[in-house]
Image 1 (cartoon, rainbow, N blue to C red):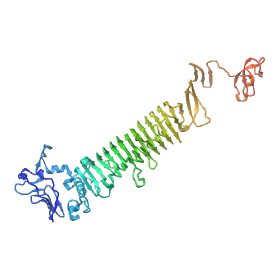
Image 2: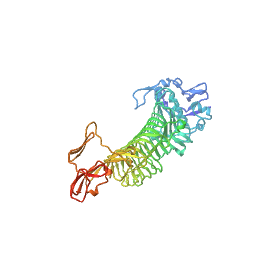
Image 3: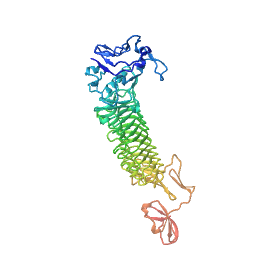
Image 4: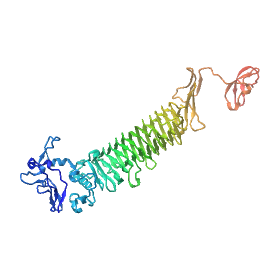
Length: 612
């Protein structure tokens, strides 16, 4: 029985003697004895036991004047090569899926179109599981496995629409740190499913690069575009310059040392979803429609770890769907977000940092912009932080949210540095609820309804900000040198609401007074060593203390009373004062008689005021 095969592109590399009389090769045949031939002129395979093997030794040109082993024949590709190389050298550089029978014309081509039995199909495609398997899938998987067996190199998919009914799986190279690259021709290379798939491409190993491929989820048959699930072993994976259209999730990722960069995500449920990830980089991706980047809650009881050490840089996201967010971190440590752009937020928070279900801490956001359509305010907060700690945000611009530009609940050690909170029509610029040790340094807060609203166990230090609206401060908070702040008091101490000293001023006067939650607070002014404490007025040290001695350096003006106005003596034992209406001649320690015009010094001996 003969089975006709696609013609392998060999003619270009045949020696001149074989092409002296140009003519078309006969159809390729898979013969009963296992040989693969082009009629009687060219045999490229031989039967070994139960399989057909193609090797340099079996690729022969037959007939008068032939040179025999084609792999030893040198040829130069005209216009693109200067050095003649053998066919074997050329095949060692790149494995092309079309060399393994891929069709990629947009139509479905099951193996049954070429083979009458699964056994026959498996002679060329040992990965085949049924005659209903797509030839495009079988050829691509065979090319991957063949390339991996050689250790490294490039697997090239052709332009066209390739159909797959099973997930493609990147194999181990088995040769240390060599790298396997699977690449297409950009938007010209399309992979789409013809059956229900968990993922279009699965990457369970490292040393892999995938680039230049359009993964499209025709008829919604596939859940994920690329699923990365590798161990933490520092071996890299790169997913670069691909497109993902219409998946539940474009890329799912578990593992370490992964670069996801320069990809385009269009109308996916979520662009990138990551759990159990370490030391990886997400950069320069573009998301149009659907959720952006997500760190979901891992299955901690199942042994999954949260993400750590992730850099998210220069990504542009336009969710533009109800309920869609730009970035959500629900589990993770040491996550750095730089120049993140989020536009077209509608009915979700823009960026969500939520440690309610799993730990979230040490997140930094530097630069970027979060906004909604100009004509419609998003319903919630621009940046929403909940049950997370050590979140530092700097140089971020937020605009267009009907909630708060920044809303934080149960967020310890939150830092807002040089934020531009530009929304004027929302509830307020910043809402802090139970946010201990928050810091607001610099920045502009445009909402005239409320620049800052604090409640619960919140104690904020704010310095050098520009507030357009009122500030509702918690008792333990301190605001200093902020433009637009109506109560610019300096409060020293007062950590977590303890006793403190408040320095207030304005309208020609300055005051120093106890502050804090306690109703009775003592106050001391203490010098160091044997140095005095001085009270200075008008440039003159009026009063000094030296140890137990109090020295007046200027005349002392005593309080003046009439005899009838003197306060009860029992409360002022040892005090002196002046009476202004003494009548008669005073005697030392004598009684006081009022109604006269004489000024007399008086002393309280504990029982009564007496002339002194």
